[in-house]
Length: 249
Image (cartoon, rainbow, N blue to C red; front, side, top):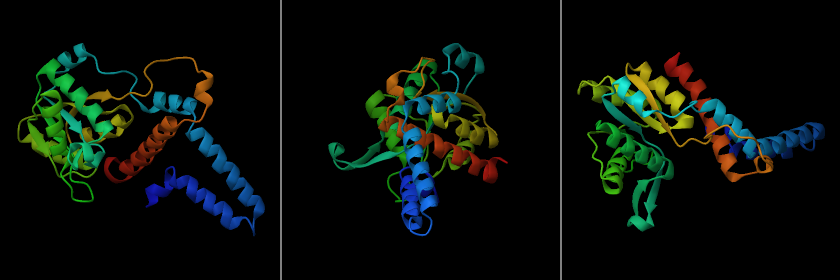
């Protein structure tokens, strides 16, 4: 509930409600809060903010194939993400969501380049549904013809992804891994996996900022895509602060 109020659209609703409540007794405060609300709505939905945020939070470059060979990884680890629940086109069964499909596609590519075994990690979620790891393994085989060596199906958070994956990998003698997740999520994920004792080579995918480019007028217009990405950046900032205080400090 706290996270829902600190991130859009809950943040916008909370500020709007506070402005309405204070409008009678403190009209100046209410006007100030309304101004803050409008400014946040614009900035968080502006493309130029998303572009700069991506340059700040994402890794500076993708993983290179020579770098993979020189580093000596022993396995590929793919982190779970949101699912699509009860997808009608798949007979009402759960399936992997768009972000997770991007991760699986890149993991399949890395597997074909390296021959490394894959571990998928993701639990059942708060509704006790089919674990994400099972959905991931099914999608990798059905859509890409790539088998999964290990399934970690208990984790509910990035930290648990790391803890439970490390225990599974340790029993199989794996210490060095390629870690696959979205570029915006990579810093927190790497910190967690290194904290539990694994050597990690980041394998980010789903970059928002692909290259340096001059800004155009479209970057200053409100955009739903920019709002989504900027919300994810805020989520990562909040998550990083929380993880440093609880797990990584």
